[in-house]
Image (cartoon, rainbow over all chains, first blue to last red; front, side, top):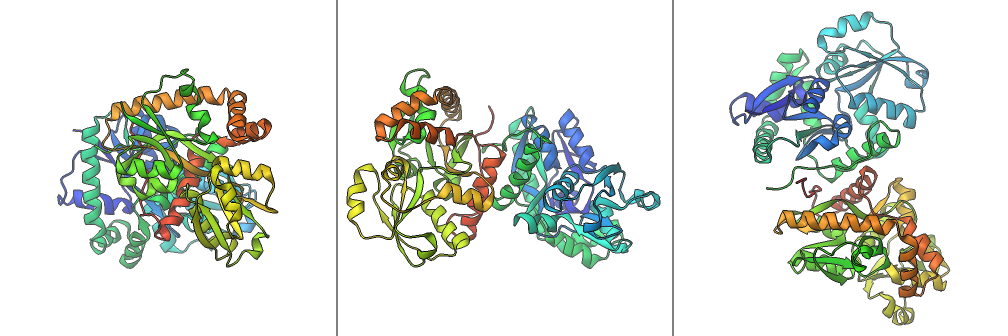
Length: 274
Length: 274
């Protein structure tokens, strides 16, 4: 049985919800983790296929093939990749910013926006920022903090920070493009026919998920303690395709990272048609 | 023996030069044409693998797979996709513009720049514009004319128009990205192992070509009657890779065309690794 990674966050419900309910047969053993845990596990062979962050793909592109037509993006506000700040953006130059250890792509997006769009120097310091970490986080000295996923939904519903900046929205304003946070990739040493079966199951599961957002929003509200209406709006604002617009956003981001030497310059390699 | 398309223009010398000279064994029967002839032949099965225009790929993406790491782009002026005009750009609103029948991507690039960047309405009329057509073209009533390839190099060296607009340069100024004019694609019904061999041969031939630009510039000067220094500069300004920057330019262009309904919204499908 091959091992298929999933992010435990609400943002993955639309892709895995039908598998969770047995509506679509899970073609693999499901392994849950934060984006960064999945990144590491797919790179070192503990997973065979997984959703991983866009930056993690580019860091080890030679080991991976992308699954076509599947990604997690936003074309505007994403609502779950948020910079919470104690003062306005323009007053954050030189500020100490805690950044979630769960994420790689969001941290690079923040870095890119700070340098190239906002012209701010930020002093980034990694900090655990899952829902269970939020209390300790509040007690840690900081000017701002980057939080992702369910913890971001939760923290934003609390209203504890005067300034909240949505990185998906900032990217869209800057480039006019969607931002691709995560992609699905397979290790190249995994049997292709099996990967194609997993891909088909993921697409079938997503089809069911997108047709059942209200049900998934209820599940999300129970899991996160966030209002069900907010959860529904959140899920409806995410995009799970990977067409030209998304590819334009993804490669525009990666060429910026490659120019700064954060990832090797490379190309997108997709699983070929059967 | 499979059939491999090549554009007869100077811009393809760096990719096919080593095959022409027997330095790299041609893995297929070479068929020469204008971009549009090759587009049609690959789509209808008269060719198996070919360089085709970016728009032609997107029009029939479901029939094709892209060859990785190979394209014809410019990251700034391209010198061979030129709008020749009798008056300045800002005076061309409503103008009758002849456009080369050899090209599909350049015409769409002109259309996109006119609509979205220049805010001009242009009345486009197709006209043959290969080197042998230039005399007749000069005698045809027009305010401006879009010419590509060797004919553009020739016409620009003549200095017959007061205004010459380089569409590669305009795109770069507008988007900050390279513009991908052509890609290499294979029909999906062609044996993959054979396509991989052709791809390898093309990459080996390109490697030789890029190391022998002065020689290819001499050949280009003889073929076009354009100064050898200009030919060398022209070839050195073209780019034959397909990394993130190029993909960003390509997909940014295609998402614009998809939004206008010129091509179906789709994705990039590449020949997979062996």
